[in-house]
Image 1 (cartoon, rainbow, N blue to C red):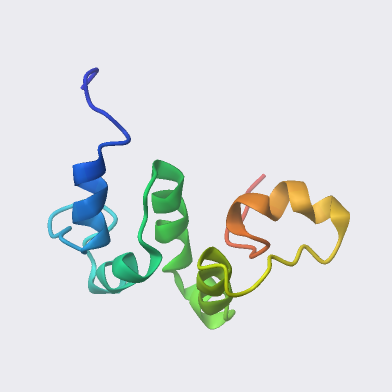
Image 2: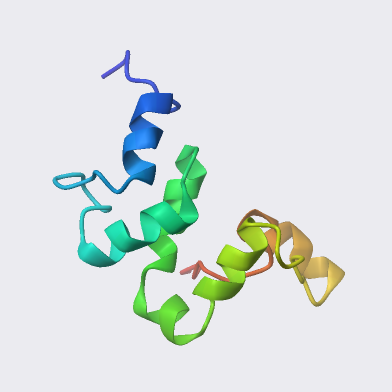
Length: 100
């Protein structure tokens, strides 16, 4: 386990093609259909991938704005400067819920 890489380009190429059957968290049909659209290239992309394919972000219409921003077709909107630090990694789209 100590020798595993978290940035292996061959692994990410496989993930981007949705060749993930049997891969924990990204093997469902919903996850697999999002992978080619999102094209994860690093670990944090996978964190976002798993978070975005959930009922809250889907029903809250957060998926398409995130994808447009990721593709550079829409600028991130933080609505207030204070939110930039919290929402910058997700391009201004609230995807995570913090529990206390």
